[in-house]
Image 1 (spheres, one colour):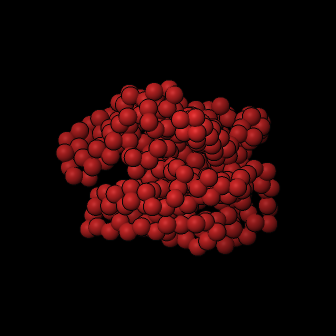
Image 2: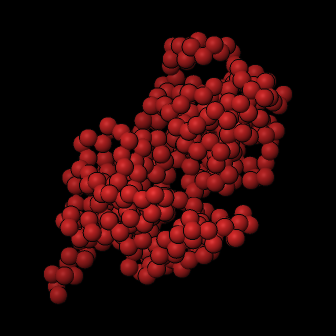
Image 3: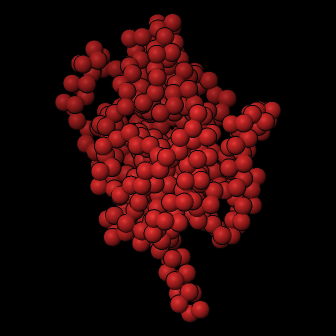
Length: 375
């Protein structure tokens, strides 16, 4: 099957982007032909993947998004595709990968309903509502129960039109050894003592994922012997100043985007993720597969998986001292928590979100061709 993957913008370290590429790579391994339909790619990683570049120019992001949706309609009619999966929000696509939070819920729960009249949010709400028009004719891949329940509070989504995906396991993070020499070299380069405890923070949007809370957790006595390693492709200047104002400039280190994240997770003591918004939280699953203790906010879609694996989930109004105490407890109980995580990994390592998506698409395609043949 030639399966289109609709993704407006690709960059190496985005969660949605990584999901799309994992699915494409899985399809290639199973003798399908994935075709990435995109307007921007900032990488050399996708050389083996067939791509269709479409123009979605515009003065504003709304214009670019609208032009991408319109251009996808033309491409789908001319590219000889059997079907397509929209990872970006392209409402007319037959398969919808719901990788983002519900905008309607966001505007209501944050008391920002007046913002819905602004052009940007009006467009987002319209596009979201169009995704769920005629849901019987589409199929939706949701990442977790929490996310599905939220969307169902605002849109009619029949049971037959939904597939709930298992956690996106990544074999790269599984059974990664602890490399003492790697840890020694990294800490020496940063000027950090080998005896300190390492808190890890990973995100592409530092503000949305609560970096200032993670930084301030270092002010608490419970983490007096800890440093924070910040990974991600975002502007960190304001956060560096934020840390310096609190005298933490020698305990907060900005490492930028990292390709050695599996190795980094294995030498860290706790992942801290005080996100304000998080539809799923792939980084949480990757930490669990690395058997790294996790402290996160309950807003995260994968918070339930974190709890199952022995991690700590805090309420959305938790403050920096709550994260500090929880991280300190997680570090002290790490050997006990690792046993629970090891059991969770065994239960989930054989599951594959990509396989689940592939089987469903194959089955529906086979049934539709059979129906056409009988007719």
